Image 1 (cartoon, rainbow, N blue to C red):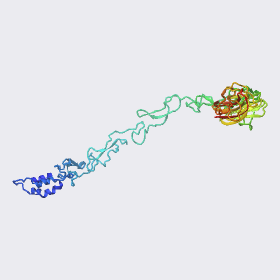
Image 2 (cartoon, helix red, strand yellow; image 1 turned 90 degrees about the horizontal axis):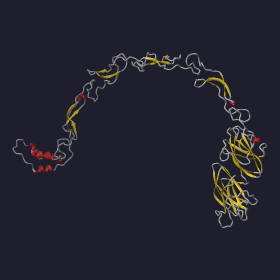
Image 3 (cartoon, rainbow, N blue to C red; image 1 turned 180 degrees about the horizontal axis):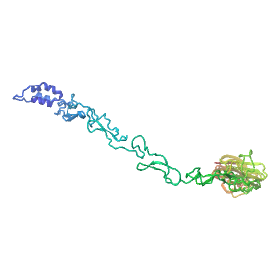
Image 4 (cartoon, rainbow, N blue to C red; image 1 turned 90 degrees about the vertical axis):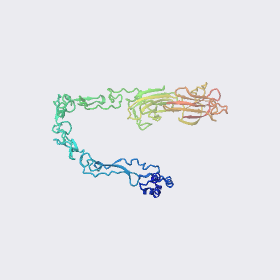
Length: 563
């Protein structure tokens, strides 16, 4: 018997069969009244030592050879429940059939019919199903309002409605109190009524009042009669007290119009039902007030050829074409369109000379025309300028012979109405040749036979003849000028300078510049770079002679770059 116990405790599952077939079988067969208990044999001890551990199973044996049985199944033998509701039974956890886990030994009972009692009578996991619990319902009151819900009855397992309220009577409150599908019925809501104001107008309707009754919602003050085609105060007729229909006049001059009084937009009075005419461009001296200012405009002094202003001395002149007349139609000739309002200027040149003109700062699309002769008897057209410097104003320079000329500042067409004029007229002070700016070029020339017109600031002599080349610069533009007289054609001592007309102040001047001409030749040539010409205006590039070192004039090559 002892040997068998040792074998059960010590041996693993693999050695269990050996124990059962040898000493364990002997121990089982022995009777309890044996007087002697045998001691373990060496074979039994060896069998214990030979136990091979495996995974522990739930079967009452020690498979993992740790002298403990079913120790991995901690819930074994503890209390458990099976089933639900009225079918629930209790038991303990026991080993399942394959020894891999535990199961509850309890067997659930059989359910009965489900009743409404808060219990799961039929053991299907749901309580009181099929009774519609929570559904809205109406109690035994006189209204038709669902104010309760289906609940289990106090006894018998059935249901009842929880609505214990009294009858809900309809009141005027915007609600359907009695649940009959109509709201505030029987109170005549919306019926027209008059409040306590002083007019005679029914301006309100019946509405619900606090407390469930009705009242008139007309809380306006007495309605005052307005001029609006209505009888606002509901008495004495439409627009009583206003002079609707009377005659009236608006505007002055050419803008005057006649009509009748009508109500103003605010209804507080009357206004004339016509609008004064739109002012048009004024034409001076015709006795008509076109711009509706109250009087015919006074013509500018130089509005016509007979009043031409003498600008021979040069300068800047202002004028206003807004009310001037269109004295002559230049359609089909020169530049610009048909022309419009115009101003006249005259100048006289005692000798041939370059003159410069621009209309920058004028407020309209201007055209400048220069004619030979007096303005009262226009001769041949000399030049026409329109839209220079990428704008609507004019700029130009021309060499004219000695004589009298008429300068006309004109509008581009008769459709224009603005007319603030700024005219700049500059005497160039000499004759000359036009060159292109910006640009780079080489020109050949000679000072032989030329007049001594100017003297550069970088030389002390002033008796040598000189030759001028002119170019124009636009507003808000500065040109950088570089020039020299380098070249085999220049065989005398030259001076080179840059000026802006009419000033004699040098913007750049050089005498005997070695670069870029070089010093191999004893001839003294001129060169400068970085001259600055800021527009707008007329600029001169002048080739002159030194004066003391013969020869003081001759042929030359002028190289220039104007950027």
